[in-house]
Image (tube, rainbow, N blue to C red; front, side, top):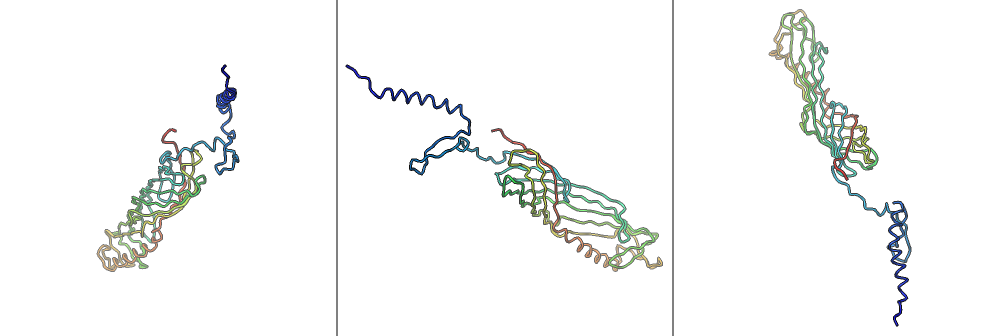
Length: 286
């Protein structure tokens, strides 16, 4: 006579529980508590959440790109930035500005001036606190073409000052000349800035308004100035000499250039103060 094992009801109950538990898990929310055994032993239990146990998506470099623009003493700028990790962005920018002003009057000279700013650089934006906007950005100007040029003249019969010496332009052969200022004695220059606002917000937003403050170490400005034609005379309009060849006039001109260069020397560290807007977007789908 065959006997049914006593374990059959227990096995049937266990199988029913195995089939039932997945359905219960599917109906629960992702934040439902899961009971697990304490890995330290001792039979104690810890409460975990599905969100805590779910695997985190690894950060992928260049997963987001930002484009933007703004204004600074280097001109109107255009910026492209990419994320390297949660703490770092790589940013490239270009700046351009042109301006001309005719009829400037200084020390008896009538000056027509043109300013031309053109530069491009690369910066590493470091965010110590990724979800906040503060950053420190070392960088380099890879191209620096910033300069100014001018043409000047002195109306005949009027005076002008050169190295604290007064000259009188000939009424028949007025003085003319040209000059320029170079803000690019270092074609490549280091920059350091700080600011607020991440062009690629770590909270997933798309629009940002970054501001920046710092300097570019462009080196001492250069200045050239030369008389191209004309004569200067004494107060009575006599004893006229050619400004391009007279040694006394040329000596005073060189001394005046030294003074002007000294006045420009603070610009060896060119200020960077900028504000702008940027829009970021994903470069790939997840």
